[in-house]
Image 1 (cartoon, rainbow, N blue to C red):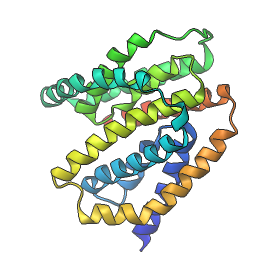
Image 2: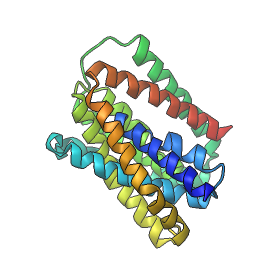
Image 3: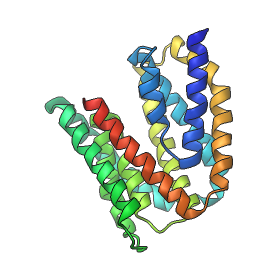
Image 4: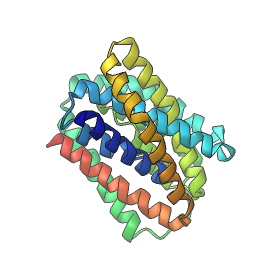
Amino acid sequence: MQTYFLVCIIAFFAGVTQGISGFGSILLCLPLLVIFLDIKIVIPLAALFGLSISTILLTQLWKHMEWKKIYPLFLGAFPGVPVGVFFLKKLDKGPIHWILGIMLISYSLYSLFLRSSSKGIKEQWAYPFGFFSGCLGGALGAAGPPVIVYTSLQTWSKDKIKVTLQGFFLVLGTTVVFFHAINGLTTLTVLRFFLVGLPLLIAGTYVGSFFYGKMAEEGYKRIMFILLAFLGAFMIYRAA
């Protein structure tokens, strides 16, 4: 019973985190769940949690959705996945985690304290950012950071940023969950933990969305960069 209780608490705060920022549930799920659950349970469970959160957030922000902003990310990501898998087989993942973590922390600190330009980058950059995202997804199972950086470099509203992230995560998450299922990773134990944690996950997502609605644009961007720095620190932690 204690294990189920802990899963529910983690699910709630994962929902709050991603409900506020549009990402970040992995920052809570993976390092905390692996303390008392096997990694083969944690990874598919976290994928199911993430997919559920993205589905809820996407329905909340559906009117802000512009698929033309998302499909270039997909088109770039698909060929990047096999490239990432190739590097996974050939290279040590440790240095990749270190490099990515340092890059994310550096970019976040720069954006928080130094960056002042309000000019966004061209949307054609979605293809290389998507490709890099696919590479990281295939190599490390962490496709999010490049897409998060790409959206943060745009002059979009916070709603446009958040819904674009959820659209990308929804398609990517569905793909990941599908492959987990056909490879036998989504076991009855995983589904049991998922169903137990789902009500509090949903509640946490709505709580996070409530606070998100109270935020100004600048405050939302600051939270994005802070969480991105924590994501970089988590990458370094995984490599240590």
